[in-house]
Length: 207
Image (tube, rainbow, N blue to C red; front, side, top):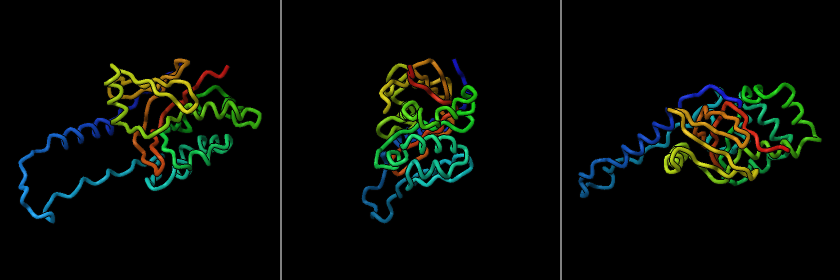
């Protein structure tokens, strides 16, 4: 079983803590105060950078991935699979996006083989196994894991299940083959969904 170094998800814990703080805010307010004196709505947190590149929440998954230097292998694969138009569409999608390092941990020659035109169908299966319909934020993912007694099983666009669990402060993805990877950068907002950058490639059944 492939296993990659666990990475902390302080951002997810922070999101849950902020939600709790908001929910427990003091109800003692001056309801007669003019609207102009009302507290402003909480500002949207800054979008995380990926590979040192700024991510624009008004742009699509494909546009932002193309700007991230550590997602160039993923972008090449998406183009080879003719999925760029789909992932530029309205969605929304939740994408677990493997980094270049994640692809490099596959067996030597695997990526080159997948990118060959004759293997397009297999490449599409691999890539769509990293995509879940709808938008699932990090906080929602943690809530689903807790509600599921320690894990949640997501149905991917590819059709096979992807199991997500917590390991301390890390969130792990476990594919149908038992391979494991971890979320590295959560909650990268997109105009058509959300991306969680992961440090491993999850694989569906390919036989």
